[in-house]
Length: 157
Image 1 (cartoon, helix red, strand yellow):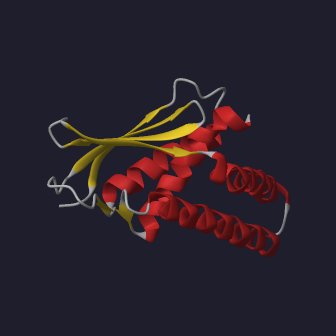
Image 2 (tube, one colour):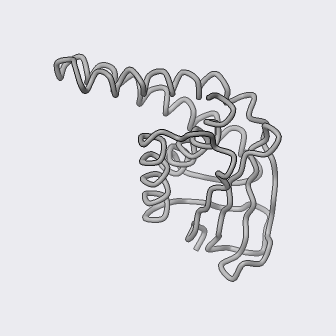
């Protein structure tokens, strides 16, 4: 079973997360644990896996362990390629949350479509960056991108 059964975020360095950031993190983790595809190519261990995500020295750390906690793989990705899409995502989310309070539904829907488009772009970048390391489906990539955004908070705020 090539999937995640546990996802942890090393977030001790996240400075002053908003309620929305905490809510997004919790929803992404919950959705990930409910359904995900996480395949490690070229490994004898077929899962399920435990994943720790961290942001250390502007690097995205994937620390992957077996179900019983044995280390399987750890690798890093530069956060640089995510910087612009994360910034765009934070901006569109702020617009969306403001719109929900003040704008008619048709305007909110347009902003939400843009938000989903940026989110999909971030997920696509993540899938590309993980190529050869981890194979993930689109929904898993979307949820993991949400967590990348949460971890990026300390860099962006």
